[in-house]
Image (cartoon, rainbow, N blue to C red; front, side, top):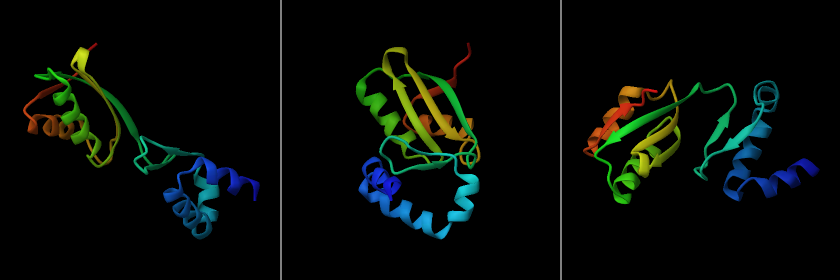
Length: 125
């Protein structure tokens, strides 16, 4: 009872009902498989640890010069299925992105950015 009261304050109301459904329908599976719930960017994304193989990548973007450019790229990539986190660093013309390798790959990310008229190249250190 205390745990559900605490969760009610920690989880946004629109996600709490989803939590309750999952908890009651799949309790035995969840107890074995779920190690933690992680909410990203207030996008109502629940990442079940171990369910997704996440990859972090860094891209240099050619042609990104202003805030409008960076906003357009950020919005497009954020809406891409499989992408969990996007950070656009305008001053360095760089994108930091975290995504599920099963749903999206490097080539698709480059294609998405090129649709907006920019060129993304994987950052080489």
